[in-house]
Length: 271
Image (tube, rainbow, N blue to C red; front, side, top):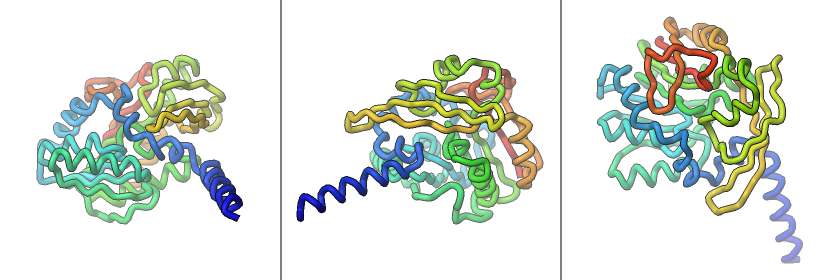
């Protein structure tokens, strides 16, 4: 009887793993490895840019969407800002809380789905960096809900700063080039499977090692956006000003004109 219960328990765990979306599987046990990735090493420069965009006004209340292990939230809090971090992964949030505690910082890290946030006209600014939630969702409608909830969470006036995958890059570069130059999630061992030019979605096989040293394979399904799409989506949500630049790791700048060589776009929108 005990053996049967153990088999059923293992079966249920396997079913849960299969039913999870790829981003849930990846971040279920990946917090330690995440902080070691090359794409997480530009935090200081990125926060320098955010501060400048916010005119160094430390009275502002900032929402960090898809905060992960809290690297931007923690750095901004160290500089005197009030930040709330939200993420879908409890493992990532746990790591963020541990890091904040070591720094003696009071930051609210909350588990929320970015498609359904409880805030309304609450924050002065929102950030969503390094593909924090958007554009990882499995449908365009779900991705739109993230933008919609970010807009709803902001006061008017309010500023929204985020990065997202550039469709221009994917159209002008081969899949092999994309994977070699990628600066986002888990680039340990990726193999391009398919890119659909009609939907602008990639399906890439990713092999990664979790924090316990176990190796996994998942198919990463991401949506690449054209600048005109982002502008239209944001303006439909009430943002009156939308500016898009090239995103350079650790060196965000309004001087960085978006080109086909930028893997990510830096978006600055104002309500």
